[in-house]
Amino acid sequence: MSQLPAFLGYVTSTGTSVTMAALEALSRPSQCSLGALVISAITVFCIFGAKRINKAFPGVLVAAVIGLLAGSTGLPVGPLLGNVPSGLPALQLALPWDRWLELVLPSFIIALVGFTEAAAISSRFAEADGEKWNGGKELVSQGAANVAVACFGGHPVGGSFSRSSLCRLVGGRTSLSCAISALVVLAILPCADLLVALPKVCLARLSSRM
Image (cartoon, rainbow, N blue to C red; front, side, top):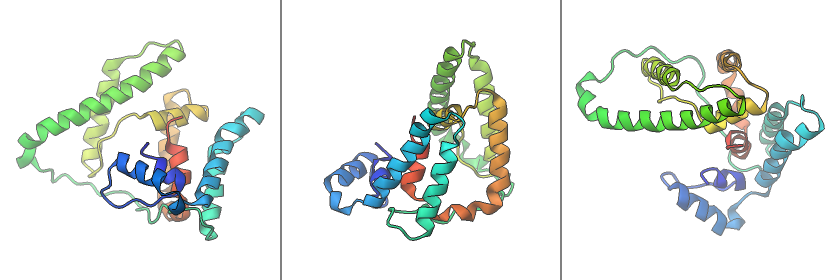
């Protein structure tokens, strides 16, 4: 539901709830973008349809390139991604230790929700592959990742259905695929400005649960 306005190329107001944004998009078809619907259909075909023809077809990459070309040429494809911060974040060790008491409860809730989602997706894939899922390792890895990201002013991190499903869709089966993905992200950080023209509808399709 959260991606519905992007699928339709509808621009929502800042602060609008997910439900209201979806209802607005559905009730105002005249304000939606036909170009966004076309890009959405092309992206879906590249990801799913082309795989039926050839499993080696890089559907995700092709869909992103098509979206970038459409956005950069000025075609009416709905809202674009816009400016993307580039470069590595600075180390920030000046943490608000004086506010630790008021952060205990929200931090616990964030950790619980993050672990629940990661546990659901990882245990599902482990079961599909006939492997045993280790909840203890999952907790340790998420804790270490969040301690590290806190030192750089980042958001809480964790596994997600969309990223894990996308990784599996393109053939990733081991932790090596995640490591390679992280290295690629670091390598293209200086070129993040190239994504300015990516239509949000394309990004929404690529990141939505599959």
